[in-house]
Amino acid sequence: MFDEKTLTESREAEARWRAAFDRLGARMESNGCPSETQSGLPIKNAYFPHDIEHLEFNQIGTPGSYPFTRGNLAAQYQFMSWANQPVIGYGLPEHTRERMDYLAAQGMVGYFGRPFYNLVYDLVSHEGLDPDHQGARGRIGQCGMAVYSVRDMERLFSGLDLRKINVVHITYYQVIPALAQYIAYAERLGIQPGELRGNSMNWYHQSAYVGMTAFPPDQALKLAVELISFCTKHMPRWNTTNFFCYGIEEAGGTAVEEIGLMLAFGKELVRACVAAGLKPDDFLPRFGFQIAQANDFFEEVAKIRAMRRIWATTMHETFGASDPRSLQVRIHTHTSGAVLTAQQPLVNLIRTTLHAFGAALAGTQAMEVSSYDEALAIPTAEAATLALRVQQVIQEETNVQAVSDPLAGSYYVEALTDQIAKAALAVVEKVEAQGGYVAAQHKGWIRREVERSAARWRGMVNSGERRIVGQNCYVREEGPEPEIFEISPDVEQIAIERIRELRATRDSARFERAMRDFEVVAKSFAQREVSELGDDNLMLAAIEAARADATTGEMMSVLKSALTWGPPH
Image 1 (tube, rainbow, N blue to C red):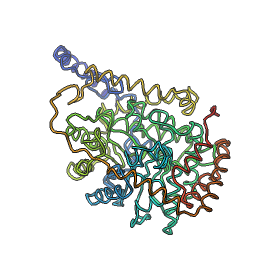
Image 2 (image 1 turned 45 degrees about the horizontal axis):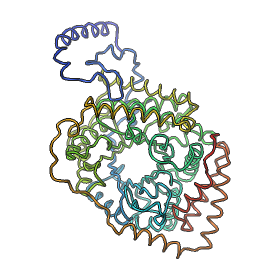
Image 3 (image 1 turned 90 degrees about the horizontal axis):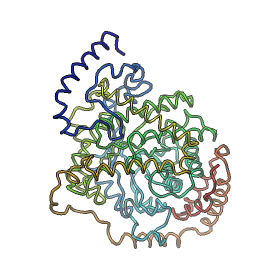
Image 4 (image 1 turned 180 degrees about the horizontal axis):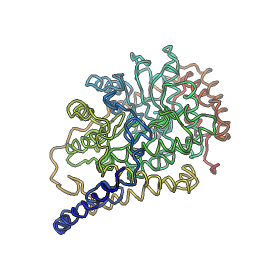
């Protein structure tokens, strides 16, 4: 990008700077300035034009042009601001609805001012249980909302026009039952699936690096393809897959591992969808990414720019995608919860503000800002409001939206973006050498890699090499305990009573017929290869079961029984 005269002058300038820098070396050693990013990538103390001489301009490009390093849209925030997407969900459906309405009144908005609800289901439903299961005790309505049936959907959404809202269903393994129930509820209102807007997480892949699991990896991949296939044909406004990059950093993985592992899974998923008869340009535009924004400010910004570049080039060069929407990384930023502290919790407001500002500079499309009490409990209404205000102040008062990709051209940012991209592609190569993402998950390789990074992080925190204000430096005696949000103690009993009432009052003949059919289809699905999918029979049977008022636990029981563990294909 630079002529030889400029490069020569750049090297000479660095030499002069280095001489001045080295004279201060002894003093700077005592300051403990880091020589690497938090992913372990080496960084210089200053950058110059020759540090990016190997880059071609077309690798950086312009905002809204391939390979989208500088963002998806030419006009970016001048065209549309990022969506405010606080994660909402606790207690009974009506409790969650109360918080939905409250945050909407506080100015929470989605794309183009459309109402947007980012809803997380509780721990019980994530495991595919119903509230009266013995394994549900003590967890009903915890870390999410207690929604297990179409009737619960009605309690949650009553009075809202589903045609005019976007709904993100944050589910883990109950993805298909939850979407089936939402579709069945919409049909009772006279709304067809093609009219619905929203997102299914399709997070089966996350069990490779964090949390529990319900299905073997090869079966989980097929379930992901099943949902994508159905929605591609019948729900053109529905986003089918959210790559859970965020969970990798939250589990202790690095920024490089976050995007490298998700690109590796993306390649596996796209291959599977193509094998099932789908065309990349038909399904890729409905993929999204949930990406963490943590403490290493410039690494986190450069990570997003690198992800956009390597995703676009991989989808185009490897899979032949050509629609710009197929090549774009649509990002929901979730500011890091793992780096927030229980000590001095109000300091977390500073951390999350920096995270959110970095995400805005990187060009995110939507944002969830963790509340300052994230390390303690479900956010209080006050904490959730302040988290929303962080976004609103950045949007309304900083003028950050006036320029597309304002950090472009920074020698450091461009060099770091390229460095991260290359390191992430090296991660992809390691996964491919294992036989692909599913094979690597079967071997436990992915979890071991993330846990190794987590152990490194923990060791650095324990030794004080990585400093955390309030935890291992600037520690003080704690002041008064902050207000802690608590779930109403009667939530568990009410949820149990409701599920029992549902079973007693639904059409038992219709339910039994639908569940028999669902079981037959699920067993057949379990025996099929990815290349034999495409008829969407499992999704259709799940919708029929939901129409018959099948619960999350009942449908998940069928799926878990049919899709048993066995050797990988």
